[in-house]
Image (cartoon, rainbow, N blue to C red; front, top):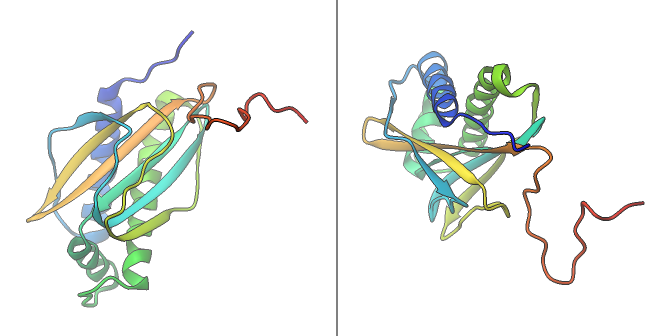
Length: 179
């Protein structure tokens, strides 16, 4: 029996979590755009991305993506100082933002999916990069506007019994290796 998840509940949880963090922690207004679904979403080619893993009865990843300029603005709001270029503080602020948004999302969605645990956020910054996982599962993407800036919040969750990887030729399937 394949478990399914209601996309509407995912979108509602992402919107509630993101709006709560922006209004409470940053004092910034943010508006959700039209959500959409992608398979194996590549992320941006430049800017800042932060990813947080989720595991429990469901497994997956939550992530946020924004421009370098918006990352600096977010950090400026968090630390009440001016940041004009991406540095360690800016990357830490984006990681913490992802941690709070995906953490709030987790708390909301656990009512439907059961307990989930989070990983430590990973942050990627630069140009000409992409992020992806090895699954062919769908990502729910909710774009947000904050003034002229955009923030994408993305979630990919599958039941823990489903494989989220593709085995490369010549390598054993980790689910079939027994010690």
